[in-house]
Image (cartoon, rainbow, N blue to C red; front, side, top):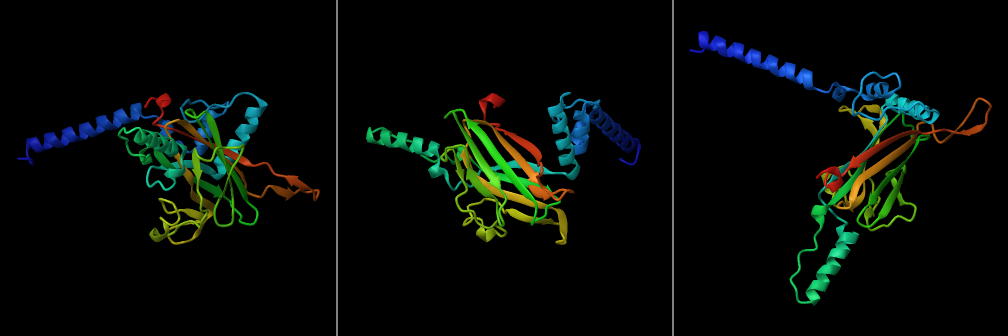
Length: 283
């Protein structure tokens, strides 16, 4: 039956349907979804001709021109930094302020003879990982410095965690008098986990990396890869988390042509994570 006219009709209908779907996708697809970092940079410049939601256009000022040059160099070498979150497992929740407040409330309820609920707040907590791609990294010269920040609306306090490069793992330090019970900093700066057996002792939920990147055949690539857990937090009062990375491929200081030691300017990139659980963001 399908080799006759009905089969031909079905075949033609399928071709027409595929063509219609392809045309709809072509008409309504935002071509900026396929842009790489350099294309995003070009279209945010003063001479860019296409608008999109990828980044913010540069203004016609000297400060914006400096930022434009910085972003060009960062995009050119493919410098990258992002925040990644994971909901489970949670190792440090008993040290969080929300846990202590909930436990105190439950204890008061118990003393008054009223029933209480569980203190477990794991469903409101997440692990924070940083992920860096550092091109042209030289272990003897290159330096990086990151800063992770957020503002807790419930407690009206800001948290800032400084991240600097160590020999075997990133070094984590609270700055500006940050409270240490809103973000629980990773307590044991161990060597990054590389097997399933050391995940729990390392207090991490995912296998980490702090080394020169390699391909599937273990050939070294031209960048240093960082994937590292920095801590845990409870998110109800947090709308956004900011990450800034300063990177000096040739070191923070170098010798110029006049044999003088000069300070090198870093390449800078920023990343913002918007909390989907925040009422401000519509959830």
